[in-house]
Length: 323
Ligand SMILES: NC(=O)c1ccc[n+]([C@@H]2O[C@H](COP(=O)([O-])OP(=O)(O)OC[C@H]3O[C@@H](n4cnc5c(N)ncnc54)[C@H](O)[C@@H]3O)[C@@H](O)[C@H]2O)c1
Image 1: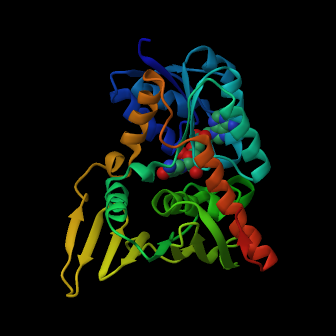
Image 2: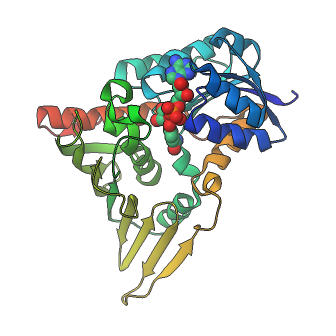
């Protein structure tokens, strides 16, 4: 196979992040772009090349792999269409909105010969790779996690649940995937939620228990403030606390005194610090080496299952048990 020809559907913020990364990968080329606002695709093409297409059909004719970078509720329909055209698919998070549509896409992806990768970029961020390394070399007991935003207005549709599916799908799903990645499969959860600033539940307190006995508390607010770090994982061990701050630092306090060691990735370019460059490389690796991508359709499905379970726990006022 020559260069992997990349087609991007949705050339907004994240579509351009990926476009710039793939344009630098010698094994890939940006071959086709499609956006319902034609001028946005034209602008991206001026920066990274690629045929500006008038339809999805035209895009499929001009690429081997499709990046789905459109708003949340459009992902399943577009990804299913791309798989139907026998294209490899990189689908931005969330994998889907709602369990029914997540099942449709999961089945389609698992029955396809094409590669399917979900954009849970944080798994590749050096701070979380380092955290996993520490967790595997020691015995963590519990954790406290938060994922906040200061507002839901940028882009404007992120505050509209009819497009996002809800705040948990837009922001918190990143760390829902992360807790599965770090701590394993969930066995049960309880959750409380309330509504303040936006036309949806926008504050959450959750307790998760995992199949291996690990447990954690998890707080997520859609409009607290932009106080750094917006996301943080604090993991507790025997005489040891490990703390992440955003994707910038990891602090390891190991022992009976208050000493600590700091690991910092603050000076890395954002595309590497946040794992975007690594996930895009992994997608090309999976296609060229015919291997499973690191974040599969099943992982995408499980993250949707966690979101839906939290909403259900709040709606019913009941503990949710996973079998
Ligand atoms: N992994 C991450 O860190 C990350 C970061 C930002 C966004 N995202 C996800 O990426 C997706 C896009 O977010 P964004 O911030 O780039 O949004 P955006 O609004 O900047 O870009 C979306 C683009 O899609 C276009 N579009 C909308 N519907 C379309 C359709 N049916 N066909 C073709 N084009 C269409 C819009 O015109 C727009 O240009 C969302 O699902 C979001 O959750 C992920």
